[in-house]
Length: 414
Image (cartoon, rainbow, N blue to C red; front, top):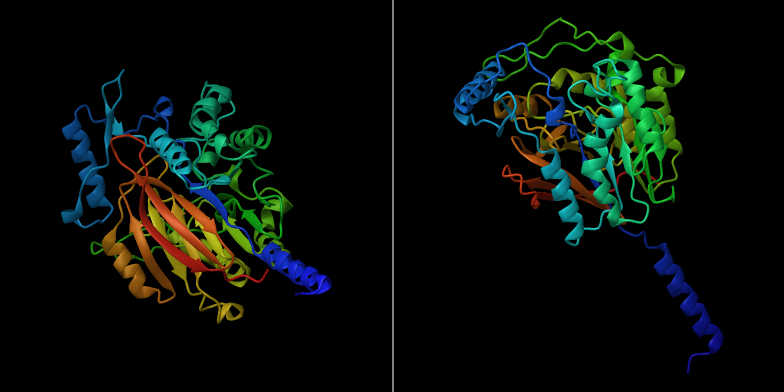
């Protein structure tokens, strides 16, 4: 018979051991979601009046972007009821419905992160386009995503801004920030902030940066590809809008803030989100990615477990071996997700992707899919993160299918 005192001690050890086991944390990641037909902007080019004209327009853009001609297929089209013109279809409601169904069908969803370009084409305008932002926010934010609040008692959507959100003015960008700061389930605390979504900063901290403002403060070259999809050198700089330049000390010191905040974080999991990716496969944003790697990759490699971005309207999973950061040697590679297919589609450029992989030994591209709508679902366990990339079909049915799944080791020090 076990003495009572010894039995009590054993029970205390068992309880302590159970309490020490980190719980699983599950969340959604989606970006480039704010493509709504009511805010379609007419281009300078003639709009396709027939579906055949729409397909031909898509083909010409495909060739101009140096994508392999044999791989061409158009994105889904939509005929505007009033004008009769054909435009790319929006997947916003299909993806919103797919996320709701995915979370309902057994995949827990405690919160979500929204990865920028939340309003197309020109962000909130503060009335500059003669249309009020109250209606814009209701149609683009509240109506699609309020149903997600049923999955947790305090479900929140943590938001960052993208380049389209800055398109009109600083006043417009700040109008969107104020909306998210004051309107549940959305959450912002300025354009850069950190937050503990579970309420316990020892479990998880999410670090949110505004990569458009970051990139506006440095020279970013124009993207240009050769006929074979390889990068061409150019000295032409892509000029930023004056209102997106870093205006405050908080904005100018964003990289230092990220480094310090990550280094001081007690969290077991440290996740960084921004709009622009550090790697992607569509071939149209590689100079921005190169500039961003120069700004934030050292901090990510030293301290973070994962970086989540949008911008490319694709779904992608990459890792960076952090070979240029001595402090990261011996650690698992840094995982990066691109989840920018929640409203618009973009094709991959497989020729560019092959050249990019050959030229960058630190890069591993695990999976990428273009011309698709979808989102990411992330599960954080004790020492492994499981990423599921989920797609929804072009028929707007809103069904959800896991297209790719992969697990990564936790790499940061708690």
